[in-house]
Image 1 (spheres, rainbow, N blue to C red):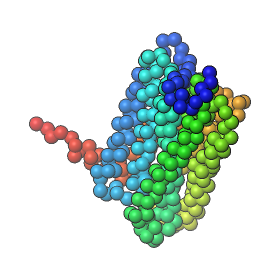
Image 2 (cartoon, rainbow, N blue to C red):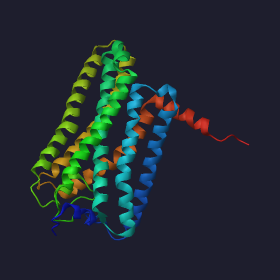
Image 3 (cartoon, rainbow, N blue to C red):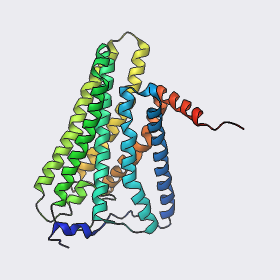
Image 4 (spheres, rainbow, N blue to C red):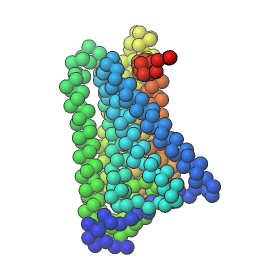
Length: 315
């Protein structure tokens, strides 16, 4: 198939990669997918509402954390409803505009998580390594500018990225992944995509390389500070908080890197790419609320208080 006019792309139906489910497993997978999506929405909404409605949590660390459940719900909503619908209807087709929207939201979710986790690491670095300057550095105005800048840069970057995709006509309609993303959509294009490839490499450097460097620097500094401190309780608390955060970041960074780089090497198993690609959308939105809700005592206590406030009075 060859569409000479890029405007003609908007009427085309694309086909996502088959799920290859064994016979009789469609409906159990449908139920699991639906319950997973409901769980993600409930847990992340709970974390979001707890931070918003608890004034004692209106601190830099929690205001940065507030963005993670938003990102997690964006990623899950971009993927799971379409997935479970296709399982129910046994139809893996998706419109070209729908594919663009799904790809945009999934990339927004992935990059946003990495950048906000990096911002949280910087917040912990200032709090632990520069405690006397914390209030002067992490001021409300600085924090608000940081959050707005992250959202603006994220949205702008991916608007430009997918605008480059829509400039070209497509000559294939088979998406090589089980959801739409920039690499798989670029493979549909008929023309030279060097500009898109360069922009994709810039994405990897900006949204994965830079956060990794910042994370490594901040955690080395935090580790050195913890080793030198004489207060054992403060050292243990700092290491527990930062250790959990580091595990979440490395999981995201590692899986995102495999997913993106695997598209550039044909030798990588497509099954591995799909499995890792799905895990990066499913596991963080499920685990982030549990990790931060259970490990962060202040947030955990606030959740319990909120449940007590909204509990119906006994008759």
